[in-house]
Length: 197
Image 1: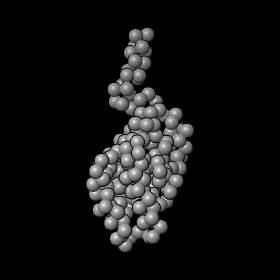
Image 2 (image 1 turned 90 degrees about the vertical axis):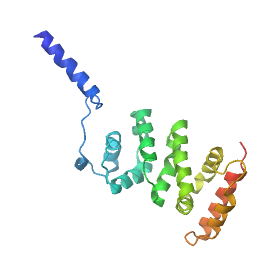
Image 3 (image 1 turned 120 degrees about the vertical axis):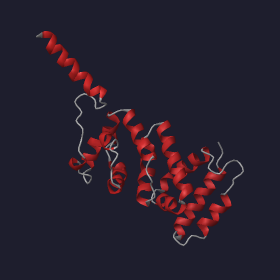
Image 4 (image 1 turned 120 degrees about the horizontal axis):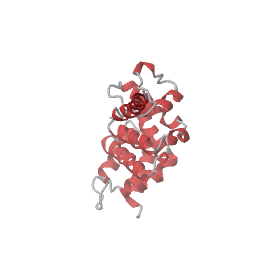
């Protein structure tokens, strides 16, 4: 009888580990998650980002909720959750100004390596859609220097400053940017181009 009980205990511990669910972690159902509740997203974040069939509106809600999460609670789940979150973000098509703004806001919540991965994602967004990126940056003016230095470090324009004039002209001639946003765009490009390492 003792052997049977011991075997059941061992199976109860090993089977969840083999299924990559962890001990005591239940699998969540997409319908059980209230995506309008920050606490619910925060509590289930590790499970949510593993879901493969997440609709775009749910992805949008998660990304928009990132600045409002209690990062002390998120940090208690360990570095692996944050690394998985960064990997999940990297796989998303992020084009919405508010989503880009949310990523800019949470950049400092990540450790050096994850911060760099997220910065690379933001640099990719900047390269693809300068107008949306600059609009998001205008909502986060306090991050101008930090991102400018980071983009310089990533050598977004290379040593010879290729495409710098093109980007400057794209901002100058944009009908979608306000005068203030254009000035922020010019200042940002100037920081990228002129800062020294």
